[in-house]
Length: 315
Image 1 (cartoon, one colour):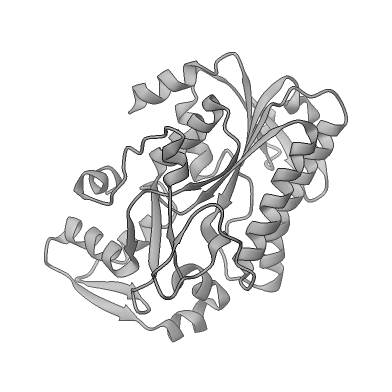
Image 2 (cartoon, rainbow, N blue to C red; image 1 turned 180 degrees about the vertical axis):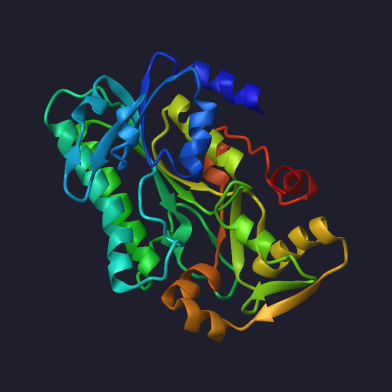
C-alpha cells in the first residue's frame, strides 16, 4: 500500500501542494503518503510555522503568510474546528461553521490579490449534507438536495458554497463528502474500541441508524486520485458497504472478543441529555450514501467492507 501511494505521488512531484489542516487525522495521512512531493502546510500554530514548510495563518482574524501560496498548483483544504470534539453550545456551533467558511473566503481573497497558479482546490466535506434517513430505505447520491433542517446540513451547504465560489477564479473545485473515517490513530474508532474493555458493548440508541464508513487509507488515496486525475465536482467519500450502528459495533466486538460480549443499549434520551443536539445529529442519525460516482471515475477502494481483513489493519 505504501508503494502504491508513492507511485501515485510521483506524478505530482513537479507541483507544489498546499494543505490546510495538515495536523489533523486526514492531513497527517496525506503528508505520510505525499513524501517526495513539494508540500506546504498552513497552520494556526505560530511556533510550528517557524520550521520546515509550515506557514502561519489565522482565518478568524484574516492573517496569513502569503508566501505559502507562491507557485502553488493544488490546495487541499481540510481545516475546520472538530465537529465531535465538544458539546454544541451556540458558540461552538458558530466556530464549527465559521472556521470552514471564513478559511475558504480568506484563501479566495489571497488568490484575488495577484496572478495565482492554483489549478485545483480539493475540499473536505461531510455526508451530513444528506441528513438523517430514519426509514433506512434511501440511498443518497451526490445529486440529492441538502438537508434543510439540521445544523450539519446548514454547515455543509455553506461550506460547499464557499468552496465552489473559488471557481470564479478559474480553479477546478472538488468536494469530498466524507463519512465516518475509520483509523486506529484517531476519529470515531478509538472511543468505540475503548468502550469494549468489559464484556458489555454499548450500542447507541436503537442501533438501527445507518453508518457510511471509509478507511483512512482509502480516503487519503481518494484525495491523491482526485488531484492526479484533475477531477472536479462533488464525490461521496464512503466505502461501498453501509451497516447499521449495531452491526458495525458487533463486527468490531466479534473481531476483538470472539463471542465473549453482550450488547448493552444506551438510551437515546440519556445521550441527548449528556450531549444535546450533537447526539441527535451525529450519534443517533444516519443514512446510506452511494459511492458510485467516484468508482465510475476509476477509483478502486482497497477496503470496501468492514470485514476481518479491514479490521486487522485498524485494531
